[in-house]
Every structure is written in structure tokens, then in C-alpha cells.
Length: 345
Image (cartoon, rainbow, N blue to C red; front, side, top):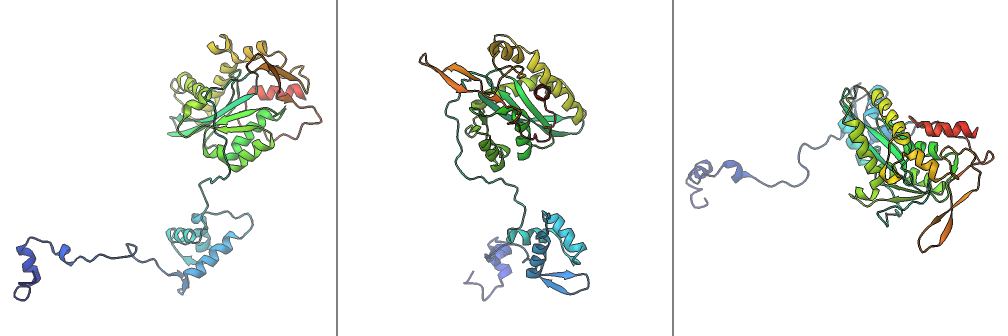
């Protein structure tokens, strides 16, 4: 090219060597691609406002009591109340640079107690609980909803469930509180996976306050929570795959009926071919399912190997003086918990 560039123009030379001009003239650029971001925003009266001033206005909006806006609603405030002609993408960029966006990722700190043994050896009711969340598809609405279930491992009794469009931290606390509000929670262990609802600080703090030991399964190891996984598999086979849900309310009604059937009528080979309710009543008469006649402070002895029986604290019903004000009833709470309330009042 250099040999002939004085006698022939560059276009002709590139034609001879079959080289596109874009390759010859290309110069690598440094920095971020695309158009440079704007430094000003126009006001409705025509004058320009610097980005630093826009950021100040955003901070002023977010500093108001009870205001917890994302970038979309902040954009609306800037347009309507402050008179700025601004795109929500720019507001997102400015809020992201200043770390003002709502955080959607739950970040946890502190040590988690992971499962030590895959198999659970529960010797009494409410010694070991397991919980998990399952998708339920609503055909008529073309969307998934979420089912949160809590099961007692010893008797396979489903103590409570909740079906909602989304399951959040406070939903987990509300369901657990509805189940356990009439019990002393000494000696209870709770196993769950690493879902964002379960690792949240509020849930872990609640369980710690209730003296409940929480343990987590290892990542991508659902077999460590096999009891609740097996229950959800049965639910999938018996209900979800057999019914066409035209609405959320129909699914909620049908699943609630199944929970009643599962606890009171469905037989289990692991429970001597009895239903969970019958097994609980027959095998643990000193700790009745509905707490009829149970005295506060009872202990149950259970074998833990070596022929030695060790007295372990039972989940005990609270006395009237120990009962605290209950939270609002968990959505779709089972009739089991409602019957407990009636018997204790």
C-alpha cells in the first residue's frame, strides 16, 4: 500500500487487495460506547437544570416521611411537581449512580447453620418442622402463585399453609406465628432451603426470639428437605395435575380441602398406614393434637440411642398468663389452628 499510495488513491488500492474501507480506516475507540449521557435537563419554562441539581431534587423527594419510591414514581414527581421534562431512564441512571435505587436483592450477613444429617429422626410432635414454597399454576389467569407449607416431621401433619401471589418475609413470620402462638417454642428445629424469604434477617431474628433452631439445606440439594418435597410431590400428583384452576380463589379452595383430607384421612405407610391426625392422637396421647387436657410444663421422654432415655423439652401450650396478643390470622390458615384457639379460650 505504501509503495503505490503516491500514484494511486486509497480507494483503488483497497479494491486491488479486496479489503473493505471500513477495515482500513477503523480506529479503536476507548471509553463507553454510545452517545454521551446528557449533563442537563430542560425545565418546562425553557431553562436548563444541571444533573447535580436534579439529584438534589430526587434526594428531597426521598427524604419525605413515608416516601419509599422507585425510579418510576420519582420520575412522576419530578415531572408533575418540579416541572422537569425528563425520561425515566435518565432518572434510573442518576439514582443508580447515587445508590438511591430500591434494593431488590436480600443481602444477609452472619453464619447460617447448614444441615448436618440428611435424615431427620424426630421422636415427638413439634420437635422438627420443615417448610418450603411450591409453584401452583392458575390456568385461567395464566400465572403462577406460591404455596408456603409447614409440616411436622414426626407425624407428617401439615400445620399450616398459605397460598398467595407472592410470598414475602412477613408472610413467613405471620404463618409461623399463627401456628406457634399457643406453644412454647423450646426444643423446636426448623429446616428450610435458602430462599430469600427464609434467609431474611427479619425471619431469622423472629425464629431466634422464639428459641427456634433454624437450619438450611445445602445449595441445590432438595433431598435434604425430602419430607416437605415429598408432600409437595403428592400435592402435585393429587391436585395440581388433576384440576384445571380457572381462578386463584378456586385453587385456594381446592388446596385447602386437600390439606384437610391429607391431615385427617390420607393414610401413610410410614405412619403405620394411619392418617397424620390419627397417628398423632394414638401415638402421642400425652400431647394431643388439639391440646385438650394438656398441662403446661409437661415433658416427654424419648430414646436417643444407647438405651438411654433423655428428657427433652416439649413444645408446650402456653398458660393464659403467658399468652401474648396474637397477630392477625395468617391467610388461609388451616382449621387445626383455629380449633386450637377455640379450645384455649
